[in-house]
Length: 445
Image (cartoon, rainbow, N blue to C red):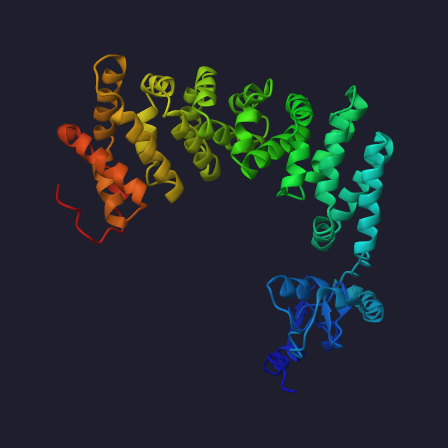
């Protein structure tokens, strides 16, 4: 049988050296190299086809959707891989023999967890949570986290064998107890840390972590001094909201949840926590105008505008998403009109970050500039916003956006903005840096 690709790499396999700091080139024996990566194998495993690979390389090959042995082209499954201790010992001996050339001995790899082991651990977690045995449950969850840290294969094995549901059920069980003291809180935090490595949650798991008792505990952890625990809680809250919009209304009514999420944005503790809180607030405000009004009342609009000034891409996208959602409220627009940076920052971000931010910027500007037609404070704010947008170069940027293309909804809003801005063109100021690379002429007005 012809080998798919090995023959054309054979010359490379025979000649590829390893360069070391000492300047001496040491050739790796052919049978010590993985046929996929051509590098020294660190965890050799033999497939059912008789070919030995480095575990990381062959598992990556199978994870890409391949179901055959790369060398023989015969059917291959991940469970068919068997550790080759003989080759591994020979490689370690060879490393020791060449230590003088700067070659370090490869460590003995740990044996991956099996499905049977995972099933036993999951069963024990379920039993411990039913009995409210926090000490035993804590030990088991710590064991799960330790095993998952040993490699992606272990993590996938836990993920595919119901560990997420068992952990979520355990969280719900301890959160629903008669009292939640410091020892129970520590177990809950340990469970949360494990859950965050097994996201996304399925509906059953989400129902446990999203119960009223569980949400109350999540709010408590979000207020905790432990920064990592707060991060994990914020990530889980975000995940619960992402699972389904119907859950947002009920979660918004959880005492203190909206308030603590807004506080984590106003008073950042970790960038990841701020981002998770922004996404959670976006879901909450996007599904409920009542919640959006509450968030506006907490003074989040000015905070978001100031965050946008020097935020990196990911933070900028999330802050703009929340700001756009809040612009749907009268109070949100009122606060935006009262901040001197609102319009200049939005116009500046239109082309400076990503397509996602461009859509949010156009939407937010459209809501601000459209405003209400009647006179009054908002009418004045709307006119001022239009003047400032024109002065910042919004008209030509919107023309450019239509020229390069955008989504249908964004296109409609951009067109509407152009009509509104047309009467203010005498105040325009063009930022020429935004037109670099444009080959087509601007559309006629």
